[in-house]
Amino acid sequence: GVWVSDVFPSDLIVDEPEAELPTTGPAARRHMTPLVVAGVASLGAGAIHAAAIGVHSEHRPAVIAFTVVAALQLAWGAVALVRGGRLVALAGIAVAAAALGGWVLAKTVGIGFVDGLDVAEDVQWADGAAALLAAVALVGSGRALLTAALGPPPPRERRIRIAPVALQGVA
Image (cartoon, rainbow, N blue to C red; front, side):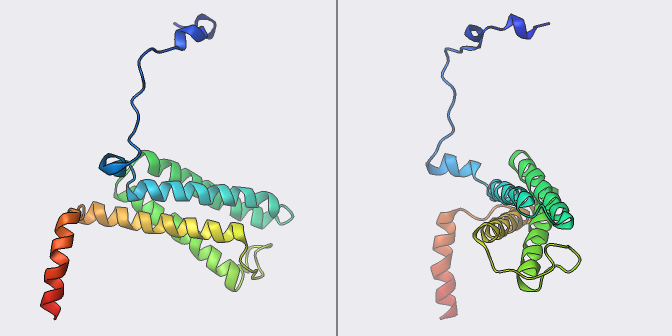
């Protein structure tokens, strides 16, 4: 076997250039699927909720709630980046809808059974950003589920040609 002491930094140098992912154009858009966008948004929301754990440290039930939400959002976001399909999209919808619903409750009437979140508070920048990211994750997951169920949308060129014909039929 190879031991750590057998590997020298010079052994790790590779002379071949790495293949780079395209950053613009159609090839780049293939990598930014709705589920990938949803996954990145969920990771961001989960990071914000993880930071909120420390802010609410005086209320153990709130700490538990933020820990669970952060863990779910971070775990699902990571899975969404490496896997696809209906089940992943459905799980994303569930996690994002729960987080967004909890935020709406916390900001409008409070969450009575969670000490520290039992009184409605004004929207802060961080929780507003987490809610926006959860909404992006919800929409992206929903779009991914629709694409998995119905197939991809028609090419953009066909959609442009169909629209004027449909409008003429209405007129």
